[in-house]
Image: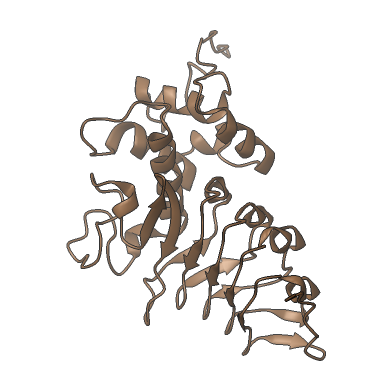
Length: 266
């Protein structure tokens, strides 16, 4: 006999999978991320997530996904004190940063992972401290604007970019040199119109290079993609970056001649 879920004012199924946390805070978090009517502050994030097809109900209720782990953490395990109001921008931001942490194998980072004792510059991720102070992070007007964990040895960051981070339109710096970032650059990175530095040297980034992303990078000054897995013709869209000052793209397998850059410096 199959029991139908009962109606819920939060639009969250009352019969959750047995592995899913069942706290009231967790159920409210699911609504926050999937129901545009939950609060006055969440409609834009829900709209974006629906457009990108991320943080879906299925992902949130699966404790093996970065989204499921992050939702459980922000609802049930976040040590910040006093607890944040569910639905606040800060609550949403900590959820998205937790998605990044789990998607990028945060528990196995060399430094500044959750509960880690080694963190000489900033606070460990998923700590009680302000998320803008977590290692390698910075904010503008309270919104994440920098993710920088690309030192000489990197930080053993491994995974693909979760598209949830495209919510942060203040993003100006992404520096993940010398890590193990895989896959393609998401098209939604085009939302980063304030991006000035994108440094992904010595990772496993591959093509296609999304034209939609490049079109939004009107302020990008430095693009570092050397020692990746780029193969095929040189991405012509890169020649149209209006503010580009430095391009590092050597030690890949790009073909053809190096194109002329169409810059208007007048």
